[in-house]
Image (tube, rainbow, N blue to C red; front, side):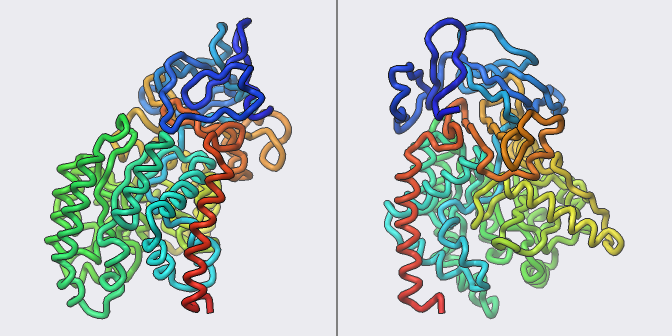
Amino acid sequence: MSRRAWLAGGTGAAGVLLAGRAVTPAHAAQPAQPPAVPDAPRAPFVIEAGWALTADAADRVTLLRDASIVVAQGAIAEVRQGRIAGNQTRIDARRLLVLPGFISGHTHVCAGTPTRGIIEGGRSYARPLEVVEGLDDADLDALTALNLAELLRSGCTTTLDMSLSLRQAESYVRVATRWGVRGYPAPMIPGIPRLFPIWQRRDDAALTASVPGTLDEIAVARRFAVANARANDGLIRAQIAPHATDTHTPETMRAMIDAARAVGNGLHLHLAQGARETETVTRLWGVSPVRWLESLGAYDLPVFGAHMSGVDWAADGPVLKTHGVVFSHCPSAGGAGGESMPYPEALGAGVPVNIGIDTHSNDYVENLKLAVLYGQAREALLRRVSPVPLERPSIWTAVAGATIVPAGGLRRPDLGRLRAGARADLTMIDVSGLLVGTGTLPPEPLHHLLYANGAAVRHVMTDGRLQVFDGRLVADETAVLDAGGRAVEKVWQQLEREGWFR
């Protein structure tokens, strides 16, 4: 299928729906360019799916063969089995698996590519991230666009972005608004310019001394979040993002929770991400990070906590489960071949688990696969010695963790589900072609995701706006890659001048 060879509808002229507007065959010889801010499509169109992972009103999911999905006004209007007659514009997905758009509950979008391929050398990523922060706004936007393009290209339509600074959060909003991406951005506090002396401190005097500066950052972040609480027709919903529990005091964490309450979109942080964080918080405040946040009243908000390698699942698992705190499990967080994460323990504790991205790898399909394979290996190794219950993850578990689970954590019944009334955030993946499929539509399509990666994603849309078509960005993919690459080169050249690679 060529890039714009969509299945023609009815007996009228063939139509192409591209980023919210109809393009006639006269335009089809040249790539059609979307407007800077695509208009939501008004006329209904139909996606003809080989398989579709649908949900009913009770959130029971079912794989539906030969499904037709009607999209109108940016939402799913109807889902039914069989083909719908008429002359609507149609997307041919008859060899594809159609899923709700993936949701990453933990990303650092702007900082992804500059650390890829160098974190695996065993060096600290601190200095590369500091260099990124020194780039000008144009280069920050180029990095944000490159990383956001990769996320979209691999089927991720919603990102909870813990931007590493206010400037990076502002960059995220600029790019995501231009492309019509759904996002929950927040500047991390403390941000990169102040983080490492506080986080990697030798004694707690640095934490105490940091309080005035952190309170100033919170005030600025709160203004940013209020201004972007429902930006770009609600596609942008800013959050509040403490870095972690060991870089805050009760005063600063209460200020962050108060800001999150004022904004209303939730709290996003690294939570008990390692033994050191748990030991520090327990020593300072007398309870674990999970229970410390509970004592401060954080859990009346939507909360996404990343990594959780320092959680005591026997003691803290019930707290997380009771409050519906979402564990954002990022299987590639440490780069390729990073350490195993407590995915089976969290599932065994009944805690809702999202599959997140973090940094380095933006390939969402690959991370789905890694979550299952790493998780199954961890469960097999620990099942006889674990003091807590374990649950062996499956691809069904991981796909739920990419869709309906994080949507529930965001308190968004209109996301993460393929059913009438939900927003038309959709990802369509080839499960029939080379390396992934067998040349024909398979009987158990989710299992073929274990043979896939982001290159198998064919079409992606957010709110009914097409952003990836036939495996390529609707935006100028070459320009995005070139500009992002030039920004990364500046980071690496600075590191070379400093002797960082030696």
